Amino acid sequence: MPTLDIPRYAVLGNPIAHSRSPEIHQAFAKQFGRRIDYSRRLVPMQGFAAVIAEMRGEHFAGANVTVPFKEDAISVAARVSERARHAGAANTLTFREDGTIDADNTDGAGLIKDLTINLGRALEGASILLVGAGGAARGVVLPLAASRPARLIVCNRSPEKAAALVALLRERGGPGIDRIECAVRPLDSNSLRELGEFDLVINSTSASLGGDALDLPVSCFSKRTLAYDMVYGNGITPFLGAARAAGAAVADGLGMLVEQAAESFSVWHALRPDTAPVITTLRASLPPL
Image 1: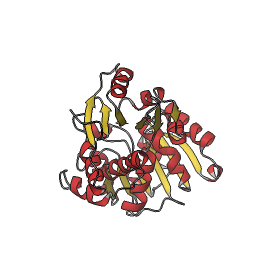
Image 2: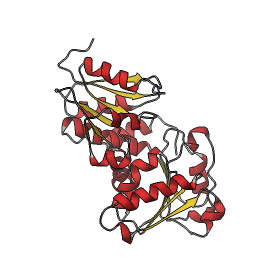
Image 3: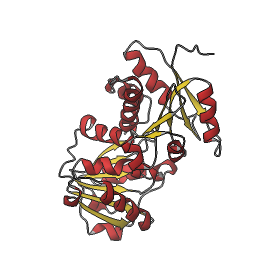
């Protein structure tokens, strides 16, 4: 049993065995000479609230939350950060000594940090295509808009979901949103071909997990394009392979994973870890891009 003077954390999800969060957070803690206890916790599909109640009784200090429980994470919190409220989902919970819980969402911050710092991409004035309109897209669309691109197009197999996401963007996007070209397209090559090439194409869908291709036209990509797959650890996915064949640069979501973890670590400890060595270590264990 861990001692109570070592703060306890866990990542919650279903499935969860694949999660790299424990080693990431342990590596961050080591940078500051700290000890933490960080574990994986498999949550029954209808058992999120019960697991949270157990963790509060077991003196946990916080939890990261992954699919499919990010929306449930908001429902257990007394205080919800603005970025979690905008996303409608949370991936970071902080358990307070008074028994209450704070919810936050660090996904968008992690993506922006990976794109701009690690990958050196300027987002201001850029043309961006966001593929997908589910929870992953919802968590990043407002931070993307806050980076002041010239164009932000959302495409999805269900155009209604994409329209709802763009409506959210227009409602909550803040000052300057009226200067961004926002539009919705169905996810098919015919409807997207007329839009020409993009500086950044982000796949937020789960298609790559199953090895499925996306119906994107070659015209979306050029040598100035970065194709970014939020999925990581699968090497060159069909999406990335098609983009590379069209001359685009490619990246997966490993950097986002580490950067959103660093943001969570900062929420909990008020310390900013160095992400570069952690990304390098994890990258060496994954199929090459």
